[in-house]
Length: 161
Image (cartoon, rainbow, N blue to C red; front, side, top):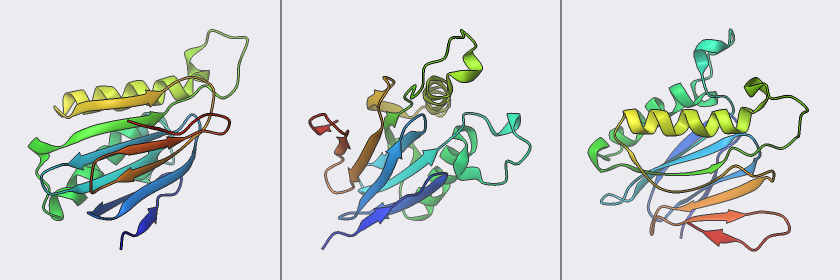
């Protein structure tokens, strides 16, 4: 029987098949899923901000794209995953509020998604699919058995990427 493992905001968790990782309420936050399809080991980070070096209180590594991905990889490797087999899926990074400014500092969703992609590229982890941007929240469930990421959005049909 598969267990549904909840990942909170600024949190990360890992699991093995047949368990499912889920996180609720991705707005500007990004859900970063890493997966070793050979061992069926998965990890999910619910990051809130792109860069830990820009924030004074940065002790929670799961909160930032630049630190959460490294922690996730280390935890997955300790469970038997191999870094060279990891692939990624992303969801979230929405612009939940509109501003009358072109200041990129306010575009936190976009910055979260861009930072996540940049870090994954630097680590040679291929992004298989993503559902980022727009202006709505998402709840996601990653099935470690088949590698499918289910995305639920209020008022929209669920989709799997």
